[in-house]
Length: 413
Picture: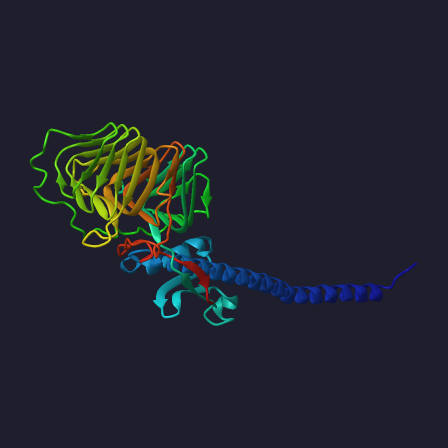
């Protein structure tokens, strides 16, 4: 069949027109696809920034509620916290976060700016992302365990070898790292570490990267100058089946309680220049008292010794049961399975509390608080922290217990 040259020319023209039309249609279609992808990306970025301020508001509210929170930079912490959640967005989104405490709670807001279409002409100046969240504390949760290690001590709180802490309704905090190992467990209302909590057995999950909690008693004067300059070299030994009562005073000699003996500490302030040791099946008992240990003073309970101590109900040391001076670097060791009552606050800012015997410690106390440089649990030991503050005649010192602590949190908006 023969085709005319005119027909061929007409068909080539139609094909050319189709190509031109298709090309012209492809441009807006491509723009629509690109714009759709950009809008999806923008929506994802907004969601990420909203999640970041939500988390930061909760973290900031929690930090602000901890003892001494007003003196710490909770706002700066929350701002850095939010930014750290979305650092991967930084190449394409310029972001700024601000945090503040308001009458409605703890607020974190964020503003992000990213490039828009046609050289930031649509919309003019680029896309602006604005997000905000407010968190509030629902109920106060007391601070009951605080480890205060300095930078040279990497782990402030450790539990190993099937040992455990049971502090169901209060805060357990370490100013450095926290460690569990070999089936150890820590159960509390809130668990947090300035550094990292490693291991398993945390319930609920531990919060890492928390702000440092200041020593709530850093301004207290503990040491009695000069009272331990002259020491008595003859120890006080209470042994056999004997029972002895000891008045509150400055004790300048070693005190050893052993066998089946009982030492009753009378109410008041007992200041120990040297060691107080309880061994065998001996008993140490006392109510309305505080045990203060000077630089060379130490406390240890071993074997099957029974310990029952109730803190001061009044005076300068109301609410405290065991205290050590700031130059006391020795261990306060509990290696007995019969330490039933330590009602009050244990405050040893430069010493280590070591609990390393199978059995429960402080379980019969209405409440307890431990503030120490380091806290170590081992060998199936179980530290029980109760929070029945109202049911005790021993007042809670300001800065710990139900006088301070983070509560349950929620986002308001």
